[in-house]
Length: 318
Picture 1 (spheres, helix red, strand yellow):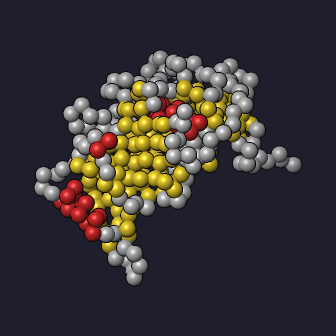
Picture 2 (cartoon, one colour):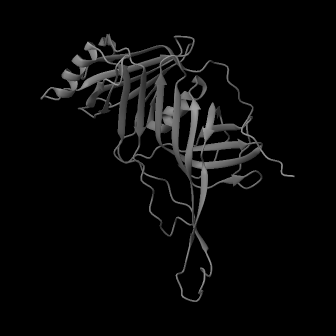
Picture 3 (tube, one colour):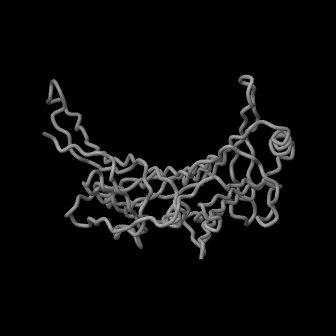
């Protein structure tokens, strides 16, 4: 009989590497709810005509490791997440890495039913943060790595004794502030009663081309022109209609500053996400029945002058 494994008890840990090609011992535990990391063996066909019914052989030409991890965001790994997803850490603030600067790479160690695999040189291609009212803050990570290392093989890492001691982030005390584009964080006071905010940071990662130096595995991927998207679901109201007229339909196309703040059960343990210049691309609502009218708006963070298009501040309770 097969010793079939179940998802309960699976563990995912991670750590930022100091350099490409040097897997490290995991230092943070991820609050994983699911994952889809897969290893694809790309096998070639010579295309010769000797075989009359099927291909004569398939040769291994490349190995690609990629997929995703879904987590409920917690303070213990928030700093690792935003540094590796964005690239630049300044104290407790995280911003996007400049052009021609590689993103940090990480080692991911995954236990699926007790079967442990190590994934080195993992780059975060994108993250999507979803913050619904009266619910937890969830993040989906899209990843690309190089190889999968089994326990006992060279470079394999072991799971560490890591645990959570702080509550997860949730949107029971969340706020979404807005103001005219370019307004400083400290001067923002107007708020919108949104039902859900979703923020996507897409690094537009481009895979390195295959070269004689690659072997079976691609070299470190390169980030391209980033795309930072913001979307919100909100009940339709006169306030939203004014917001729509001001930031969507005005011929001068003004930008809006947006700031999302959410906390754990402790308000001093919080994350602030500030985009000083967001262009609104869509906003409105439609009647779908006798109840409250559903509406939404979405936009994209812009690089205007020297202002960072997005800054994430992770505040810990000292």
